[in-house]
Image (cartoon, rainbow, N blue to C red):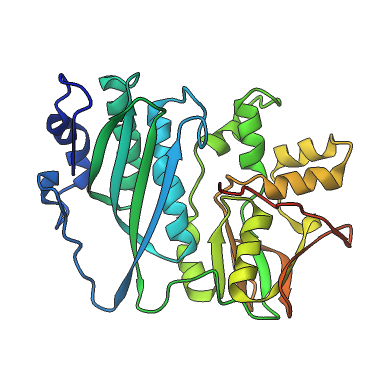
Length: 318
């Protein structure tokens, strides 16, 4: 892990040693983060899965968010990708651009949050880069995981007749952002907590690996991410909004809306849920069936048994 100081008084290498060397946890190939490269060990009979997500202040999390929560969120959105691939988390590389306003205490808190969630998932930091920026805080994590050779669960793989399923609850991430902005009531902080600290579904990793024909994590929005599966698999997916699982707070919000169909579309398009949408010939434990795959292309969204226009269906990356 290496970098260049953004100011004369900043000891970049001392900072790396203090904040990030403990996150390496003596991993083979990390060399205590004292080199400018790492060696990724091999695991016979396994493929190495690589994923990378970045977060930018004011785009992927609220400006002024607690640095420890930012570190934890960075870890979790990347671990979510590994979970959807059926991969066992193993290591990560970090790139972070510190804004001038982030002092030593903020940087240390970020490292503590990141390290706590990586440790819980069994992930060691192998290296990366740190720089200074005149812009907003920006960080990217490259996460590595193992799957048995040839077994990574892709977006492609769905066949006509497969069932479309999703884990957990949908819409809490979108409502949570609105709650964090104080646009809707959130008396117990449940919704804002779901946005700030999503829970990667590593508990479902083995189920996905052993039984899913295709899968993706729900980051852009349930409709959009199911659409990615449909496009990659070359099938037509039917998604029934009335079957989408909702939490009690989301259900209460929905019941207060004048346009329930539009509200359901918003919940299924909002993103930031970090649940897993998957297909399989059989029902999977921990998942709710919300539709099925047929011959054709694209995705059809139903509400009240009738087709509805989903619009974009979720976040579009520019």
